[in-house]
Length: 484
Image (cartoon, rainbow, N blue to C red):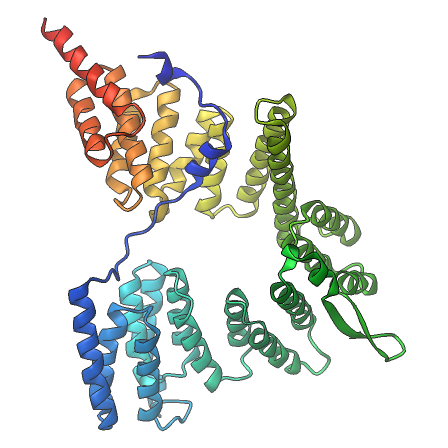
């Protein structure tokens, strides 16, 4: 084996970023020109049937459109409009729907749990034929769409759920969260207002979220940290103790909320979120540290997560500042880099304890052990983490590098093989890395046929990747020496 195969990896931020990049999941709804034209033809035909009031036939056609292209807002909206017409907008669908909807809804829920998204979509659409305002079915559909990365179509399902159930707290809460992510703050505030009105004495969760949305809206509209003058000018209107309307800065407003109820962690979190939005991570960290002290909520997972994130982002910001002024070769940068590595390791250990079933967290912890050269513990995290389908390929790649580091070479080769098999072609960088590590190891082991297989596959993808050309030359040299 060459020394390069046995040497530990240099700790670099770019290496961390590359290791953290998860592969994209194969898209079961991939579109091409032929499929697109076929769906457009179906949609046109469905619209003709809708206009002729043939709602059942139109539903058959619209379901085909949405099932094949669930992110298409035009198709989803047309299908829901067709169902509204079919049931005369009665907000309850089929009068006998209670006895009919169970089977397709159950199939949709099961499919979502198994991440069988095409089946979840189709079964959910079939259930909506019976009652398009059924909250349980609509919840399954919008959760499926969110997991698939769609932004607009979940709104369509949420809004029709709200039509039939305007006071449903869970529907309003879910819709508000999606609207917030799309920066549609006024609509999100309206959702929380409806929740607040459902409680005679008000609701603290709703009040807090309304406050946070007002702050977020002002930051978004004034450019946040990018415009200091506008940021400080943005204010919140509130009522003083004497009942007088007063204007104050968002920061002072949130600080006053803490003074009113200093034992409520949510109020500290709102102020920390304000600072985080301005990338003032040191202030956010101080607020959250004080929150733990003042509230005594040492087991509050949201509070701890926020505190850890702020602390890490604060360290990363300082690292960037030092790199900019003194460079990566400075002792100050190296020391802070080591401090950040140690802190990240502690954070992910804690999260794995708080969330023992979260495989993504095990993957992150495995990366930190690997970066710190603790390969045995890294292996213990990557092995269960590979049961998460979207990370299986990169977990196998990381396992291969760990096994190679502890000189378990055949296990490393086996892991690289699994990585190559499970990393999708669209994740080209990790695919190339798997071929490269496997090929380089096979050369070191003088398994020439295996090395040739890996390196030629890599060369076919990218002949300029790292030193693949030199490895192919070395492979040929080894073969000639063995034959001489």
